[in-house]
Image (tube, rainbow, N blue to C red; front, side, top):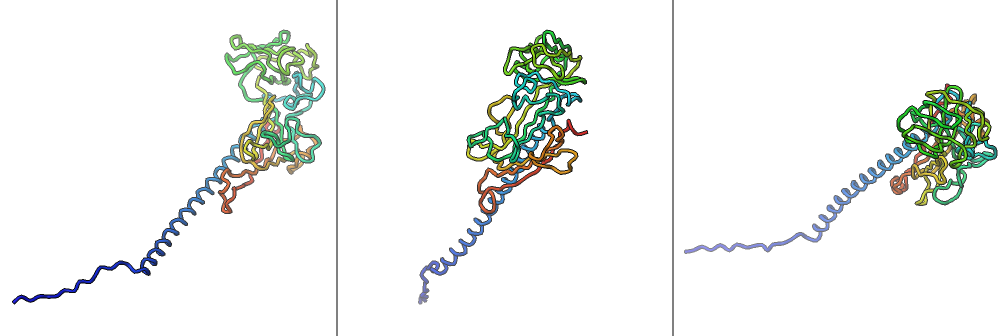
Length: 342
C-alpha cells in the first residue's frame, strides 16, 4: 500500500502597504540626512573659499599700496628737500602743475604725498568723480604718492651744454618720453627723456621736444624754467631712476561693483587692481601728533611719515555667507614712508 501525504502549499505574498510606507519613510530620513550633510559641507567649503579670497584680495591690495607708500618722496639720495623740476607741466614753470609732476619747488617733500577726502579743500586733480567704469566713487578717499623707482642706473658723465647724460650701464629699458629723476649728494632733478641711444648709452634731455617736455636743460636746484636755466653738472655715479606717480582710489568697475584702482603717471584712465573692494578710508600720521587723522586735518603734507589704510573687501561669491549673502571683511594696515623715518 502506498501512503500519500497531502502538503498544503502557502501562496507567495509581498510586503504590506504599511511595511512599504515605513521602509520609504526610513529611506527618506537617511537620504535627507545625507543631503543635509552634503549641503552643510558645500556651504562650509564656499564660506571658507570666500574668506580665503577676501583675505588674499586684501593682502594683494596692501602689498601693492605699501610699495608706493614706502617709496613716496624717494630720490635715491639723501636730499629729499632739494629737488629741481624742469618738466614743462611742473611747479617751476608756473601755473597749475599736473598732479604727477607736482614735486620739487624747493619745499621738502612737496607733492610727494597728497591726500584727498571728505572735508578737504580741493578735490583730487588726477581723478574724475562719476558712475562710469574707472571713475572715482563719490565721497571716497584717495591718495597721490610720488617718488623714484629703484632702477640701478648711474651716470658716467653729464654734459649740461648738450643736455646729455652718458650712463655706466650697457643696457636699460629707458626710452624717449620717460620721466626720470637724477640725484647726487647735492640735489635731485626731474626731467623728461627726449631721446635715448642704447649703443652709446646716452640720455638726452633737451628742450622743445616731447610731451610735456622740458622747460629748461639746466638741472640746478632750484632752476629757472628758461631754455638754458641754471647750469649744474651731476657728478659721476649720480643715480638715475624712473619717476613713479601713483594715485590710489575707490572706483566703479565694469560689472557694476567697486574696485581698488591705481592711476599712474601721465595716464588718462586708472587701472583696476583689486575687485570687490567696497570701501576705503585713509588716515595720516603727522608728527608731532601721536594719532592718525583724516586728510582734512593734515596741516603739512611734507611732515606725514605714515599712512593707515582700511579696506572693506567683499567676496565674489554672492551666497557665501551663512545668511546667503556675500562675505564682507574690513582690514587695516599701516605703512611708514621710509624716506621720512629717521
